[in-house]
Length: 207
Picture 1 (cartoon, rainbow, N blue to C red):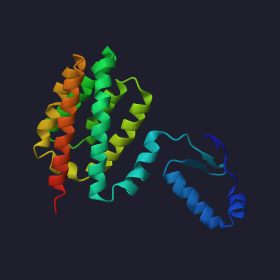
Picture 2 (cartoon, helix red, strand yellow):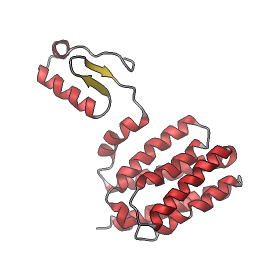
Picture 3 (cartoon, rainbow, N blue to C red):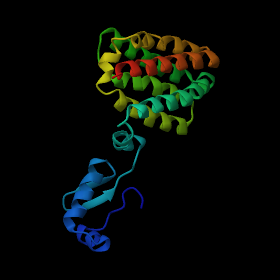
């Protein structure tokens, strides 16, 4: 089925699947809450266009139950982002550089003023991903960044009190490396950035 396609009415779904109408109704409500279908009063349910953002929440609730999974996620992020930032350093346009710099400024202002806004940090990493001019990498980073935002959760405030706070100020160094087409330096800086994040998450979640 394609986005916009109408699902069968509840009665027909019930007969086809061999379950009660209440079970069908409950399943549709779950799919609606996950952003996979849209239910309109009197109009039934239809398939929604699924973007990367639509699957982050449900995926996070499954993946991030264990601390080890969060660390595995950071490891995956490091592997992908180190290669990604090299491409960004080679391909970033003037518009991309502007977006990366603006995102770095927003992160700096949030951290300097102790504002707990993980969206700005995500925007910085996504601005770098966008600069690769590779839509697959951008979609992967959208999903991974969303998962990391979920993973930080309540730990973020505590993280910002530790050494990782310095790490956010280094975003300007990352920006300069990309601006100067220095792929190796940009890769080293982002690797250090993510390594510090890993160490701090281990510290915060230590029993």
